[in-house]
Amino acid sequence: MIATMPDRRSGGVLGRVLAAFLVTCAILFTSLPARAHVFEATGAVVYFDEAARSYSVELLVNVEAILAGVDPEVKDTNDSPRAAEYNRLRELPPEDLKKAYEAIATEFVGGMNFLIDGRPDHPELVSTEFREVGDLSKVRKTVFNFRGNLPDGSMTFAFGWKPEFGKILLRTAAPRARTEHIETIASGAMSETIVIADVKTRSALNMVKDFIVIGFTHILPKGLDHILFVVGIFLLSTRVRPILTQVTSFTVAHTLTLGLGAAGIVNLPSSIVEPLIAASIVYVAVENILRPTLSPWRPMVVFAFGLLHGLGFAGILREFGIPKDDFLLGLLSFNVGVELGQLTVIAICFALVGIWFGGRNWYRQRIVIPGSLVIAAVGAFWFVQRVTM
Image 1 (cartoon, rainbow, N blue to C red):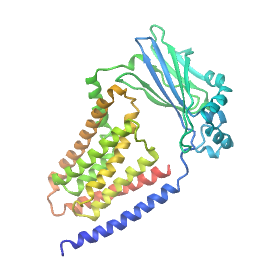
Image 2 (image 1 turned 60 degrees about the horizontal axis):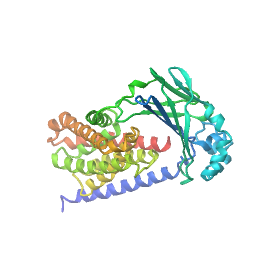
Image 3 (image 1 turned 135 degrees about the vertical axis):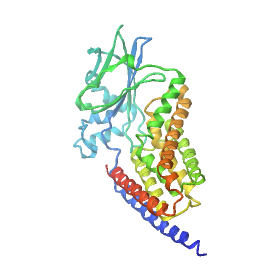
Image 4 (image 1 turned 45 degrees about the horizontal axis):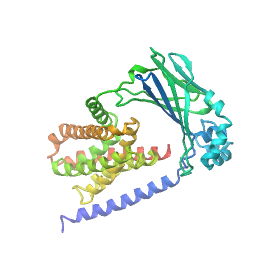
């Protein structure tokens, strides 16, 4: 009885702490302004086909905001004097939105600047897709597809448009692209000069190597939030079995949602996923402080948080626009890189702390608790920052 009483007390304290934390999360989320009313930047994907001497550009445009004349710099379209018109347009069925667009079609296309080797080019608008209304809490994007020719010897490409059309998130794409140009173009600005020959194709083996590196670097050094989560898992116990139990649970979970998210089957907005990832860091750190051993529910909780982390990785993988035929290979390669990154973090923890101090009587008091306090503080800061930004 004496040996079990502290665990029960700590479990009760942990329950109260977590309940208070979840209530705080709920209050912060419900007090946030609606995020669906921003003037969303246009997504632009540029494809080069050197064999066919052609290029194509796909634009995903918030046409309703442009038609309504909403200032692209507003934080919330409800703050715009054109908010009523914007909201009216968002409710139009595709055929009516198309009619409204046709009134500005010439001006819209004429406001675009396509440059080949610094000279203006005029690609053909080959298709326009006006989508169904759908969920009004989300911005509807209209899809424009342009196709142009690449003169012999063409070396560079650039794109931009009128400032009232807003920002552009531009990226290049090619089959198994070895290099990718990604940038945010400010309203009214031109993209950087893109060297056409740099957007190269690659072999399947090279793609595997590159995606392993991409997955690894999104843990080390880029994934500080994921690093802190893994360090939190390590700190609770330096024994191999508890670590492997948690890491395996985390791996299975994030592999599942990484695949579903990258395939577009599950898609939660980053405004939800990112704060919850920060909350997962806080939870693991707080449990480290309140419980001296691995709880029966810890692997299940880590699994649940792994699902969230997988959705965070999925957003990264989606940016690469992997062709369907290469999707599984790219997904597995990226995931291998992520796993190698996580194992490297654990190996570093063992090298710096576990081997030297893991067996000491004071390990928990001097390392686990102070380290977990720091991790919890950072996670809490990120949580507040992410729900209020």
